[in-house]
Amino acid sequence: MQTEMAVEKLDAATAVAVIQGSLTMGTSLKTIDHNLQALIQGGVSRVVVDMTACPYSDSAGLGVLMHTFGLVQERGGAMRLCGVTERVSNLLKMTRTDTILRMDADRETSLAALAAEVS
Image 1 (cartoon, helix red, strand yellow):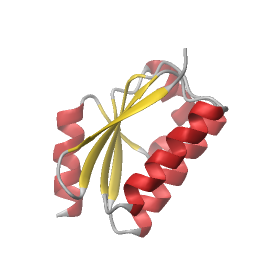
Image 2: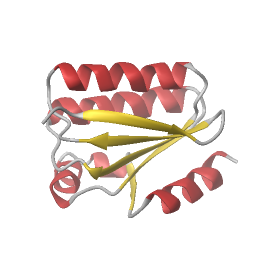
Image 3: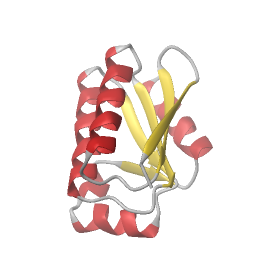
Image 4: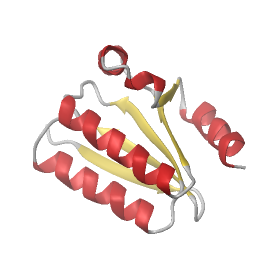
């Protein structure tokens, strides 16, 4: 299964990136990285990455998430993950990136937290 990303722009500064499939090294991941960078360069400063349909991530996928987080931070924004599966959550905990990449149970919680962080 090829990994895909759909973007839902909620306003000029807020978007939800929905990941469908595993975040693993390859062409799909490169495309997702490019699209996330373009989104941020286009003015989005609040990003929710919905990982409900992402069963797995390798270190390359984690690298894309961390890179995206850094780009958002450089622009004074914030990023949160939601719907993180147990397997991906274990990767984040093992690498201690769970202390950097904030996770929420669902999209609504992430959006509320972003609104409070960036207000």
